[in-house]
Length: 141
Image (tube, rainbow, N blue to C red; front, side, top):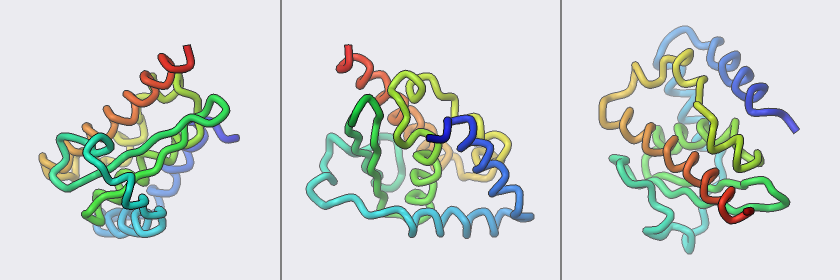
């Protein structure tokens, strides 16, 4: 399985092919469309990420010491952002996820090109993903 660092490098390389921000946004939208929808029974308040302008749901389970994430959002750009954020951490162990800095966001310039409310939402998503890493460490003992 690819490490977080390998996946992060792949994301940076993938986005380097786009010259302007409209192309990057279109790619984000495509990522959102590719992500499987979250089943309706999982779209509950306890799975909702607070601090996002749109509704975002994040559900996590642990299988064989690795965290599996499922997510959805009611706005297409936000859906693409959560899909992008989950790529490096999908199927990784809780410790790595809890400590992960999401270093690819800076080189992509994502935070600089988002509105303040979207940037806050992005940080809320990052925080929630990392919290699952912390929570599953505690469960694992």
